[in-house]
Amino acid sequence: MADPGTPRQTPAPPPLPSQVPQYSYAWLLYVVAAVVALGMAYAIFQLHYAYGQAPHRIIKILVGVTIFTVAFFRPHVALHAWLLALPLGEYLPATGIPGINAPNLIFIILLVSWIVPRIFARQQIFVRARLTVPIALFIGVLFMSLLKVVVFPPSTGSYPAMVLVKNLWNSVLGIAVYFVVVNTVENREQMKNLLVTFGVGLTVGALIALDQYGGLASHQRVSGALGDVNDLGAYFAMCATMIIGIVLVSSRIFPMMKRLTIWVSSAFAAIGVFLPNSRGALVGFACGLGLLTLSVSKRVFVLFLIVLALSPIWAPDFVKDRVAETRVDTVEAELMGDPTDKLDPSAGVRLKIWGIVFRETMRSSPIWGMGYSTIPFLTYKEIGRSFSSHNLYVAIFGEAGLIGIVALAWLLVSCVKSGIELLRAASRRLDRGIALGFLSATAALLAANVFGERFLNMSIAGTYFFLAGLVDRCVRFAATDKAPRTAEEMTS
Image (cartoon, rainbow, N blue to C red; front, top):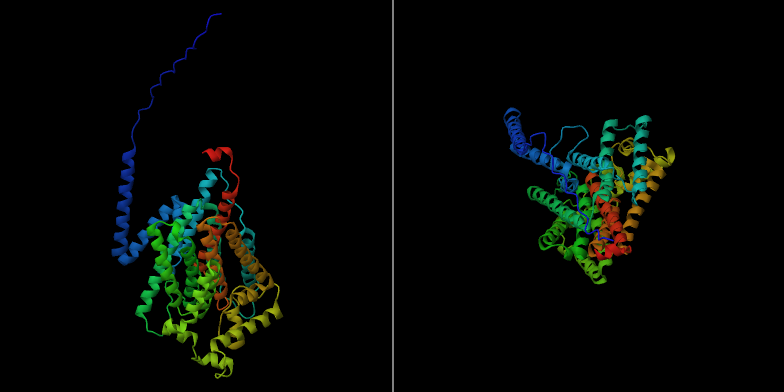
């Protein structure tokens, strides 16, 4: 039988010439860029000369437009912009759109840039995480509390509906950033970069507060870019413990410049805790640092206790005066009845307010509460002056009743469980640093909220739930690290 030999391969047919002449449209990109540049130049000219806008405001607008444009096409850039925007607060330019400020707009762009591409690619948009149900329940309770005020206005009075919606809208967006983080952060390298940006934002926020402190009288308290002394103090107490946790545990894994940035930001964040002169922030910072140092090392914890015991020596005078404050406000003295009472007047008034809220809530609606933001009107009716509850837990009970307290407790316990789960599963320095920092930041925030309602502030909620998203993302990464690898993965 004859050898058939090597079969002949049929040559490929020659390519057919295109029936349509090929042209390059690269020049069109330059034309479009030139038109956009001219348009922006004309807009700047009109803003400055026709509408009298100051140059610094025009620069802020241009920076904002650039960030928003880039963020739309690069979702991870929007997360960096979000972290930089939160500590700047009132220093960011207004959008002119009701209910939309700069952080809101960044979040909306982030949301759209996350969801829309996945829809077109037919990819899964949402991955259920540990905090999904607790967050949904807590937000639902808040909205029901608001709805109760709008549909059934209390006899004591309430704020206009649009004001309530705007305030709750800002709080909800701060909480909802958790879902973006757990669905978009892809690896630990992105986490490290985000933590560096987080540190840069803290440094900028502290520098603004330091600049204010240098221009104010010694007896005045600094509100920074957030516009409220107590909010600013709680923000720095929470963030400082987080970034110090990264410094103590994970700083070695960062390159030199990024490591230096984190170290510098931790120092500025710690300084920022003292500038607002908020006793709640100081207590929260002490609680957070105590938990952090105890978790890192017993020696470090003992050193922390020594430094804390020596605080009467090293603490600034304005801090010592604040802690030992004995000045009596006239109105507070009248409310207390006896200005010689040994209890600090502001603390005494808070106890009086808490008693009023508990009594009226138990009397009218212990299950559902009296409704969103009704406490100032209740205190005005009872004692002739509007006060907030000065306590997150009292406020939630008064406004949302026992259901609100249960929802808040479930959410906070779930956050703590996430941190503990990551701490147990952590096999890398970054994971352990994030876990310890987050748990310590949680302790600081819980303590600070005994003295005020700081949890729902957008800058605080937005930062805290960003960190919570990193924690749950790290839990997934840690589980993947421990999963058995296939033969193909081991040889690749």
